[in-house]
Length: 272
Image (cartoon, rainbow, N blue to C red; front, top):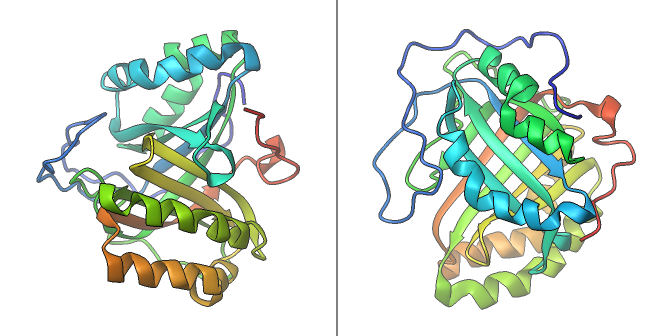
């Protein structure tokens, strides 16, 4: 998608009356003791950058957070880099914005008319957005607790599409163990039945890592999560060896995923 949001209004619950939390673009340890009120609207926007724009793409990781602080209706957000095949090599042509909004109108206004996105579009950047409803979450992200489901949120049915977020702040002394385990896990998830899309993301090289995956159904996602031996082995090691200083796991209902634009049908990663 280039420079504008599309689609009819989504069916989210009305926004709650809690005031928006402070937006912290880069909040490091010590943790901030904030808890975001539950809210049912999250967006995941994936940007592909032309080859000639890779320097500008890298630079915006440092400049975009300041712009995001002034975006109306943005309660929480992170601009994230990506890696090639979940590995150590950065993909300088792919970035992502994960955001939580006060309401749908604010999100659509940002995607349709934000001046930063207009400049991206002028330079040939393309992007697509997945609209998500938080259903289940635990853990924290820089001391905050975003993606809390609204009290009225219905549980995910096994047949529904689901998006999964994992995020961890890795302990320095466990970096070797973590990264040695990545290749086998990446191969396993790439061949998992029902996987429609996955990407490895990062806030900081090596130590602040995340993944987002989209699955055909909750049932197939659970089949991988609970039965894949590679995944189960890593889960056991993270707990036994204390890999993470902080971690978060969240599941989302996929409300709108723009498949008509190639999100799950024939999408190929941009070459680094």
